[in-house]
Image 1 (cartoon, rainbow, N blue to C red):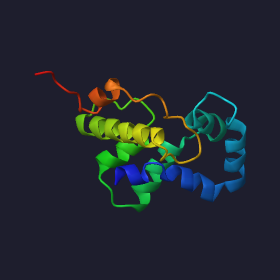
Image 2: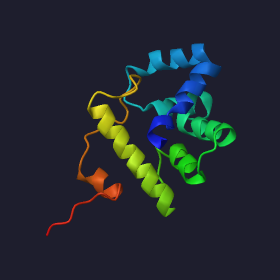
Image 3: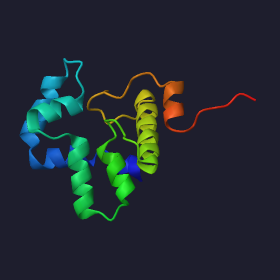
Length: 128
């Protein structure tokens, strides 16, 4: 479920300020900075934080999931459950983007998926 709703903040932005958000997308196509960096600079909030606030107010979702959604582009902190959910979400996002299932907006998470991501998600493999 977390994977399905983690970018709901993009939809909220697009619903609330469609012209400004479309303009933001047009301006970021030629830059190396992430969508979240542009959102923070332009609107003072990222889609992750906006989505977190929206979900918190309107949907009955666990607090850990809400926190993970709010931090899916940031440092996940030290809370074990939130950290694991956020790492899994980031890993799933990377895999989806690399296999052509991105949101079509900005390939900010299209960095090469590697062993580091599996370790962060608690999916590291041990040699026997």
